[in-house]
Image (tube, rainbow, N blue to C red):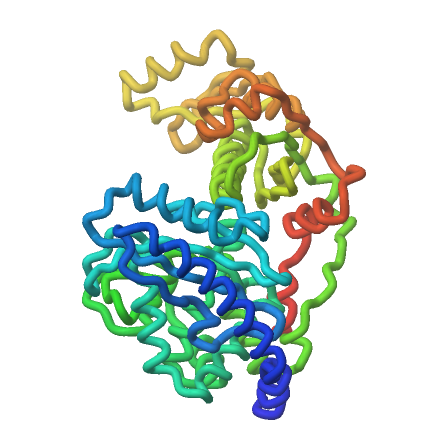
Amino acid sequence: MKKIISQVKKDVTISTSAQNVKLKIANEAFDLVKNQIKNYSEIVDIEFGGSFAKDTWLPNDADIDIFIKFKTETSEENFEKISKKIGFAALKKYSPYVRYSEHPYVEASIKKTKINIVPCYDVNNGEWKSAADRTPFHTKFMMKNLNENMKNEVKVLKKFLKSNKIYGAEIARQGFSGYISEVLIYNFKTFENLIEKMCNIKENQVIGITNKKFDTSIVIVDPIDKNRNLAAAISNQNIGKFVMLCRAFQNNPKISYFKIQKSKISKKFWKNLLSVRFDFSDRSPDIIWGQVKRASSTLATQLDLGGFNVLRNGAFVEKKQAYLFFMLKEIEISKIHSKIGPEFFRKDATDNFVKKNISSTEMIWINHENKIISLENRKYIEADKFLQFIIKTNLDKGIPKGLKKDFQKGFKIFVGKQNFSKSIKEAANEIISSDEILLYSN
């Protein structure tokens, strides 16, 4: 393991020339923003943040984050309006655009490097007014507490997470952020120690120090805010993948864990796949991803209630099209189904059950557990027709409010394999294939 980690450290070492190129871009962007803030008395200062400021970035893969610090008395309206004005004016040569987190921020690219102009309030530690207010404190904390060796360990961890597609804080991924990577190395000092600890981690185990109770698979405490659980932003699936990857790497250390593996397209379960495609009006990636993930979950519930056993579900966004995926136990189910009623000793409940179902029942009887059973015919036995009915007539039950207008403009449902684009096939394949991470450890 030590030999492989040593090799990866060499691979993630940033050359002096690459550092100089990145520094030049960063200073250009910083000066452009600095020239703009002179016009606004609401602004206290600007500073670098993120992995660039902390020197934990990977070769060819570092955004430049510039934080505009506002006086605390600035209204939220001016906070957003002024930061956007500054971002667009500063980066006007580089086709800037707005991205959204809790608050909007401006993004552009200079020589293939993303520049993020992010507003925050100039607050004291713990007196947060916006989600970004913690970030300058994160930067200062890590600059003080990560030595050069630990920074290299962070880079190894980031490479491990990225190669296995569980890196990234955006809602589309719900993975491990750069800051979480730094916090893990801050706690465990080396990548090797982290692997060892994660192999034996217990449910609800706390990494860090806090007096607050959190209800997540694991807890990763923010060292500058003891009441904040960083793991709350990571999906259970990605936490599970990370634990399994750590076990697999410990059992059989290989350099392949630090290289992106080509996806294998499954064929066996395409016939079990139900897909919904629709176009959506323009909105930020974080917003649309949150909406399509909720739509996938709520429609999966509706399919289950309709008798279609949903084994897995997911969503994918490509440009201005969204896809919802459902892997079903069966695409077509039995015409008949049984409703289980109350025990016959419960007079009122029994009477209500019989009255409610008497007109639609094919057979009714008492089973060996003293319960009333009604055998009925289903209206829909094909999953695609059932889903079509739900979306068209019960939009409130399965679709988030923000997507209603998009669905009302039209949608299409597919069964089985289709002539999807490569990226859509890969996204669908994740739903109908084994999680390869689970196979690594065997």
